[in-house]
Length: 396
Ligand SMILES: O=C(O)c1ccccc1NCC(=O)[C@H](O)[C@H](O)COP(=O)(O)O
Image 1: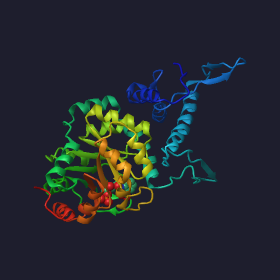
Image 2: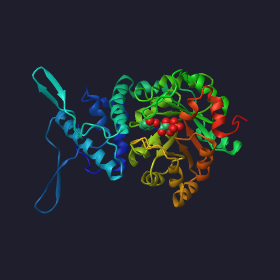
Image 3: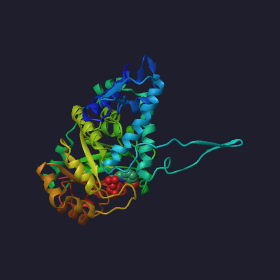
Image 4: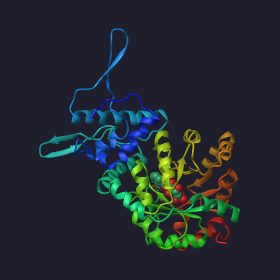
């Protein structure tokens, strides 16, 4: 197998190699199983060929003479280096995985890890992403794409997420509601002890929610894909957003297989090439992506990407947990708001919405939909929670 490839990262290269990562055959190199971490890393950038400057100024490219194992190690190192560098060039501070492994230290019979800047997440979002990286690798091993293909054939048909939001907005004159089925969160702890996801979903639907957002992350939100599947099979008609930290295209296929109609892409975590590629996969599967931004720079990046139908403005800073609904207004002011309208993008106001004046404030700023969790999931009867949030019965 030739390891020679272009040394520059282009869209085409990424597309090709991403597809390679989705091919279950790529878990084998020369017939031998490849450690999953290598395959994942293989999926991004090609190995750089060694370039030598010749006397006449021409560059010659040589096939590196090294074992495949060594070549993969070099590649792993390169991928880690370039991925974060590339993301950083777009203002992304979240590192996809720890820059260095935690070295083991020995002291007599004890072994321990020393913490340093390179192996300690800078904030909760980075911690979630690092954990997700390991979790997804394990899930992919258990359910490679060949298995997912069969699950996808049996998946329920996709429902029109954007259509449901538009319909609710024109029917009520208020932003369409994406009601969040969330048991807990890192910032707020457990929101509801008696958490029955299907019962809550039914109560939301009865209260007039246009769509539902179902947390599937287990470690930090106490959610699950079983919850998503159970809601989808319960007779609830609302389209479903799989609220997950997506870092790998495999997760999109998995979400669809479990009944999702929409998925979340967080611009603070994903660089532009990832977002573009993942949107293509969504379109292939009939899903819509809610692309979430928190600041002007993320909004500007997203405005340059074609094919986006839904942009969420998160009022919560996922690094610091600070919530400010003024963020929605700030990001929709002036030219940005104008460009979003020209592109026909539906804007979703997310987080920290508790009262009818909050809803009026973000609606005034330009949102056509809102994503709400805490204020309605905590109510004894979430149906009444929705009526209180909007100040009117949203079901008719
Ligand atoms: O809410 C958190 O603590 C959190 C931490 C890290 C990543 C994401 C996080 N939350 C996701 C959300 O932003 C909310 O679930 C969603 O927008 C609803 O917010 P709310 O109505 O305030 O519950």
